Image (cartoon, rainbow, N blue to C red; front, side, top):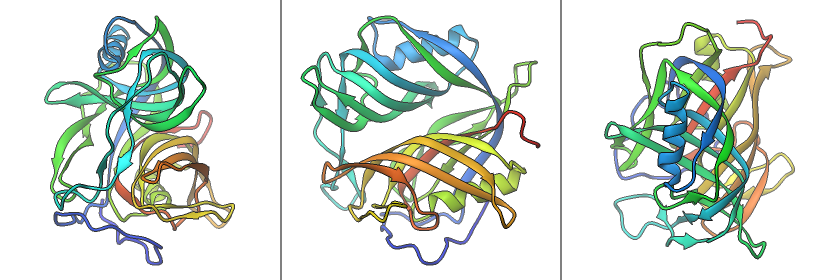
Length: 297
């Protein structure tokens, strides 16, 4: 699906490669609410992948809240060291004995193997709060961890080289359906740089006729404009959608509401509801939209 980037965006970023005309990509699928049991003794990536396989799925979206960790390693956004990328990552921070306060992750695949991408907030054993990008191969749960997840049937996120940003990024890929029970009607979606996150989601829903949906996901923005009047301009960030939904607007069509938590490259942690039409994506956004139960198709 190709859209013209909306006018009036307050900020933009220049990436090293040519911009593709496709500013968001959407694959229709179905999501199944499941309960995962992630085991300790292996890295988070392996534990989550095994837990999905035990339920008969390749991947999906997981929300982690108040999860004790044996090992917790993460990075934050930072300026790029050269012109090969528009932004980069900080040094690695370690938090032994930390706790994940609130995080979201997409389990997909990379080079044919399970791979996850996770943003969230956590605190140290001393109570110091931080936020960023969890390193899933270096982190480990403290014990057996029950988790609520939305498992996917009919689509998966697959890491592919992105010429525009020069990063390997998740992109939604269609897969054959293998479940007889319907599950929730869902959209697996990624949004590209310099595209307003809210209006892109609204356009994706119009394309698939989805009027009301819950929105889960992670990504990055170029600064942030919040509805409380706060405006931040740091150009790289790590973001978790705390609460998101698509609902019919009073004037017809669909309207997106996204409440986020964000850490930017100044290490400032902020949060709130985004102003529609004023929040362009920095590198990517990865989202799972699930039709609200009882909503008309």
